[in-house]
Image (cartoon, rainbow, N blue to C red; front, side):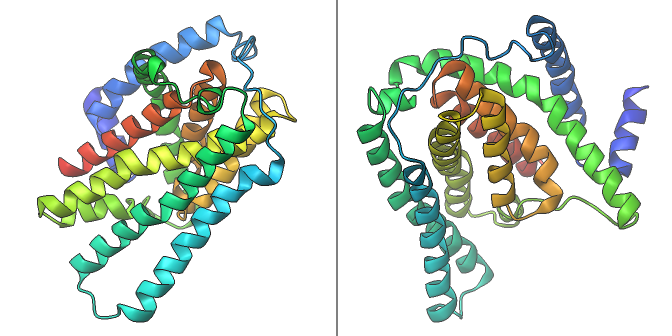
Length: 284
């Protein structure tokens, strides 16, 4: 199929992918093919994966998550109760500031739990600055490899949506990406970009992979632990239209953590994925 035909097909599905996405996916398909061959279709992918020794009770792994959610809802309740006259711009800034503030108790608590309950403390969790170079390089490969799967998930979701709802169905854009497009003030964009590329990847990987997936891994084999933590990650996000693509991404994040034992690797993959989304939004 010619590039122009592919582009037209994607536009008919809702314009969710670009030619750049296709080029990224072409590289990704090659890497995915190599990975499938080398791992016997994934069966041997996590053989000899490093073990994260820990003495973390299951309830401890959930404390940062519930603390994060509770803090977010509490701060949003205060905003809705006492700050009712905000402009659209002020509302966007306030909501992003809330997200920045709300993660602090969860991050501090998760790091304290890791320091107490993991053999090796934070390094046992997978936060070792000495592995940054290796993790960044591997994160690029992981991201490229999963992009064809993410794009396929987007296309399947769009096809299913059009069949069920009708031709008007379109996967909604993430709220923060909308705000980046709508607000030209660099201060506002900088805050939103910091939240999307730095803060969210760190706190989500710390909680969903570092805490929850590790807790599940104490009782399950690698792939079941990855899939269950990915499912929890997916339903945490509001838009069901994004769930299939997010599950593919989350499985990649979980795999990269289990394969390397480094939490920095899924953090970098997550940050790069969000950065690509931000760049695509800015170029619209």
